[in-house]
Image (cartoon, rainbow, N blue to C red):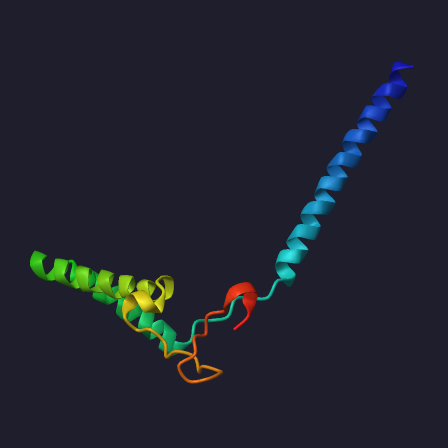
Length: 116
């Protein structure tokens, strides 16, 4: 009686180990089938290296020059974000008004109950 329970527990443990091994093999096979990452193009690599070297060189400049360059870079980013996040009318670059349909001098605003 007790031998049957032990055999069942052993068989359950064995099947769990085999299932885990099967899952690991499938995962490693999926990783092997994944496409290899593309190498970085030469112009992009050159730009990355240049940016890295410029940041390194910035640390060796005098303090006031470092602050000025950092502030300029920050303001460039802020200006771009202002253009994306702020309505054009608030930035003073309002778009041209749309062409008016109807009579000259007539208001485009709807009258009572939506009539003109």
